[in-house]
Every structure is written in structure tokens, then in C-alpha cells.
Image (tube, one colour):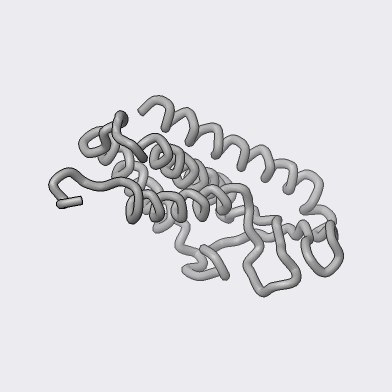
Length: 157
């Protein structure tokens, strides 16, 4: 449980450090081309979710982050057997998910918007940040583990 909390804090801290760099060096110029036609660093103040959905709903996102955090910690306290196969990778998935969620929640609480800066210019995809990577990778890993690796007791498998 402590490892999950420490990992979550590390992911959120890495995210916040990268956002400080974006605010300091990228915001004044707006955009830096890294690989022409492929990848840019583009400063965006995101006041919603991906693609700007639910814009202006910052308290909803903060409340969801708190609810998910409580749910994850409850799950690991009551349900997850740390000695069973799959639970260590699941803990890692939740660490990424929660660290990313809190990285963006910190932005919403203290800035009123999320700092985004990674942009793939060869496709139509929203500008994103380190926290978003944590959330997406964490959710994908969690889904794979829960669907294909971890079997609940009494499920017949």
C-alpha cells in the first residue's frame, strides 16, 4: 500500500516538473517543432478533458480523482492479495493511473487548467502531457490484467 502511494507521488511529481518546464520555456514561444510534420511541443491550457470535452468542469474532474483514489485504495485493502500472480503489475498500473490523475488534478486545483504540451502533428490527436500518458498506460495495463491475468476466487477459472 505504501509502495502504491509512493509510486503515485513520483508519477505526479514527474508530471509537475515537466509542466514547470513547459510553463517556463514553452509558454513564451507557444510551439517548438521537434520532428517536422511528426512531433511538436505545443503549449496548451486545457480546461476540459481530451479534445476539450467537459470544458470548465474542473471540480467534477477533481471529485472523480478523489473517488477513483478511494476506490483503488479500498480494492487493495479489501480484495487484492499481494501474493497472487498479477497483483504487483496491477499495483503498478494503478500507480500510473493515480499518479497521472493527481498530476492533472493538481493543475486543475492550482492553475484552473491542465498544462498540455506533447503534440503528434501527423494525426488528429489532442495535445497531452506526462500525466495523460500515466492514465492511458495505467488503464490499458489494468484492463489487460483484470481481463486476462487475474482470476477472482470462485470464478470457476
